[in-house]
Image (cartoon, rainbow, N blue to C red; front, side, top):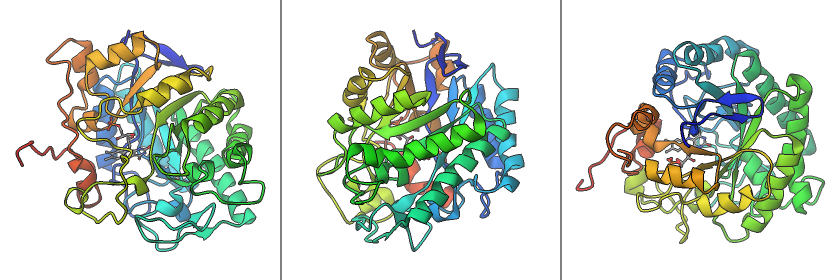
Length: 376
Ligand SMILES: Cc1cc2nc3c(=O)[nH]c(=O)nc-3n(C[C@H](O)[C@H](O)[C@H](O)COP(=O)(O)O)c2cc1C
């Protein structure tokens, strides 16, 4: 089943493997694409994956999450971005590529002063963001729409909104981070309004046929955060709105329970629940939520998180729990994993051990596998 093509919107994806968005830390300080980035995407395209989703690119400087993050906030960046789209299209047997676009909201590690729907303390960074004014919200909606246009102009096959993990869209959707009492906060409907307006403004610029995907949380894993009951309602709305596919993830950075040693920086809030990147013992940890969301949507569902063997992939697809499986850490370790699986080479298990060292070294070295052996 995993080798069978399936459409996302009008886009034919040659198999059921998706490369989940993975921040690269390889752009210039101005957000421009570098040779390193181009090579990374060439290697992934050659590795056999059906759809690549790029690492998140910022739509506005006020939404830049990290140094060396790719930007999509200016038309001058389009020629660089198109080099990524071109290399993928030139070097693969029909691999498709979507540009992930995001605003970091209160989770920026690059900015001192952050923006968010409400001035809710981030217990991880210990920073209180500034509540966005209506004018700032409108500017950001326009920035997202312009980023979608730039993505299309650069030659990407699709874009994906990063609406998960506690970044700005996720902050608007979540009752934990959105305490607004105007039209952008309160009921579920009102918390959806921000992303709905982004979607509509984008479609005005790129037309209905250009596929726009969204990644969202099944649950926030935070008390008073998004519950499955509510995320199902949100997903149903997204499906009716016109999104081409939904990728189900979960959690916010604040849920981080990793130690300072593992992460390279000190989490100050250590609740019992998990971060959005699970540990080696957590296989398919978003699947219980994805399965439920799948029941209420009419568009393809992509599940991400701890998909650690081909047997598991086949099981997920044949039981109809998801239409696509998405892989992040396994493809950092083995960019050619889809080809390996498709050709029946080696084990069903991924080689990645989910040690999360890629995450802790990311900011200093750029994306790479620095696999820690279990004994280390
Ligand atoms: C190094 C690293 C970078 C990531 N960057 C992004 C990103 O830019 N956008 C995003 O939506 N998720 C990002 N994630 C989360 C992954 O897309 C994915 O949801 C998560 O790692 C679980 O999938 P996995 O178990 O296959 O790794 C990142 C994860 C890691 C480990």
